[in-house]
Structure formats: structure tokens, C-alpha cells
Image 1 (cartoon, one colour):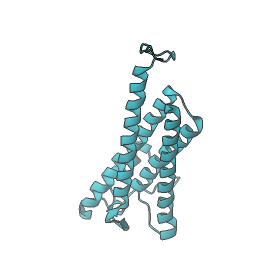
Image 2 (spheres, rainbow, N blue to C red; image 1 turned 90 degrees about the horizontal axis):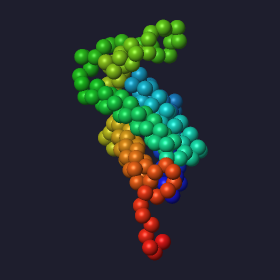
Image 3 (cartoon, rainbow, N blue to C red; image 1 turned 60 degrees about the vertical axis):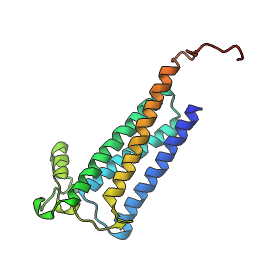
Image 4 (tube, one colour; image 1 turned 120 degrees about the vertical axis):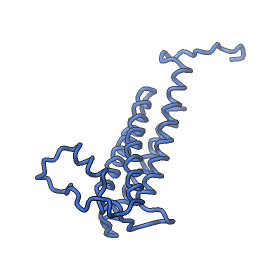
Length: 183
């Protein structure tokens, strides 16, 4: 029962992540919004989360595999939460305190280390503070933050559930509980 439940949850997270990715690409290419560095980093976290959930729903892992897939989902959603939270904070700061220029991520000739690029993205740029689209008075990073927090809570709950079930039933398949006389 728990395997089927786990596969369906992975599939639902995959569908939700695919819809969120579709909306982000629609807003970028159909509406014409320009994605900043933090948006691209959030999209990368969402892509990793969605890909991991697709693999898990197709694979149908056992107890250890479910633990590893939920752990991957938790790490990706935590990274996305931190990135979205930073962008929400940057949008509440005055634009004058931020750097006017940012790194061009599309230029493949730059040999800048990845750690430096991520640090520069988290320092913020003027393009990360612009609120160009809202839905129900929430900006795109705020929606992204809500999505990542929801997946973080789900992943943490499922991890705790897998650990709890593992403590209740040993790997050998035998029950750790005594059989009742009526069984």
C-alpha cells in the first residue's frame, strides 16, 4: 500500500512541477518577461525536483529508494525555497542599494567559477527586484516560494513516514509485532 501511495505522490509532484515549469516558460516566451539569475536558479531547482519525481514515479522504489528520492526532493525544494526567499527579500529592498550590473549567464565564453556566479546572484541585481507580473497580489517569486515550501513540507513528512515505517517493520519482511490469536 505504501509503495502505491509513494508512486502516486511522486507523480503528483511531477505533474505540479511540470505545470509550474510550463507557466514559467509561458511567462518568459509568450508574455515576454525576462528571467533574472535567481529566477533561472529557481527554475533549475524545479527542474531537478521534477526530474527526480518522474524517475521515482516510473521506478517505483522500495523503502530505501523512497527515502533517497524524498531526500533528493527535500534538498531540491530547500534550495528552491532559499533562492525564492532571497528574491522576495530583494524585492522588498530599495533598488539603490543593489548593484547595477550582473553577470551574463548566457555568455559561454566566461570562465567564471560557479560558486562566484551563485554568490553574485544572491547579492542581487536590479533586474531581480522588479515585480513585473502578479496574480492575486503575489509576485512570481512569492508563488515560487509557496510552491517550494509546500513540496518541502511534503518531502519532510514523507521522509519521516518512511523512517517511522522502517522502525516499525524490519527489512527482513517479518513483523516485529506478535501475531494476534484471531489472525
